[in-house]
Length: 478
Image (cartoon, rainbow, N blue to C red; front, side, top):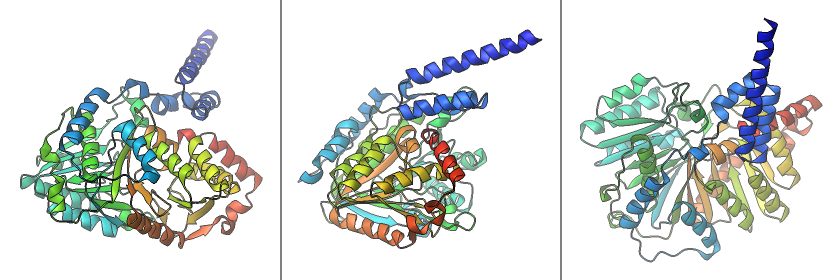
């Protein structure tokens, strides 16, 4: 029997060594590589299980056929998108070119934007837009809960399906894991096309658990679009426990809806293998301009995913930080920054730019909160002003800079959003909208406390600081 024991030990060590070599050959960011090596070394058995579920690098598998994706984007965007008198601001031309060159995220003018700061504002507007739908409804969502809000929206979709409106819905299989299949089957039985994103079927697709569609995109009739941080769930109205939820979501009308439609149809091709390129889904912008005035509110819908050659949204954040002249204000529910983001924040602050970061005073994930502490102290040392939102859990993901550029979407300032998830943000170049977004930030800042007021972080006991630093080693994996 003793030989069986030693054979088991040797086999386990061999598996660990092979796995470590695999991690090294993936050529990931050094921080992520070291984190996985530490997990494999110091968490026997558990480490290999965690890697099997969450660590396998599917980036090289090219989950989405890029060739077919290019066909889809070129047909849809270049054939149907026609803009006259498009003027790009010289101050941000390099950023616009970055997005356009890397992922065909074209800039669109003539946009009207409505900002929602909670579920009480967002859900009635969404239900009204659904009620007015005449052609199609496209929904790309991370979480759709089987709760009063989820059922209210499901009922509204069923009503429209019975009227003959085309409805397509993508939900993330892990994000919506608590939602029973019967909830979606009820809609399928009414003719609504529904697909889960990267469904997890153990053990065949365990590596896909780590790559989730975190986007929140809704397009109605190709003329109205929604994007931001809110999922279709009651928590955005009721909150969780004693904590109300604060979030930011946008309703967009105008050229930018083309970008939202394109993002959805790419995801639909991935889950359904149906290439949709009809102009029916890209109504002429003249239809919009017959109702709204032309303007030069410029917008780019930018997506990122783990199969991309470059981390588009992260590069955009870095570029904004490095080019800022006056200020950059940011909100994120989680702060586990990649090294480029950390470097850009420190550099901007040291050069005199007013860099402000807002995160929740209390997070919904303790490991993330502990790891965040060490990063917060590091950016504060460089002059970044950090604010802790105390009026509930702030799930908002926004950035505004220099009274001209702003962005909102699904992207958190953390490794998972920048490296693993499928995310979507819309970047705006417009003074009026930037000032409105700035007001949203400053209103939240009035409900926040500074680092000096958070005594638990100002004089943290040694063991707590040690805990935070140890957990920080795992931050690329959280």
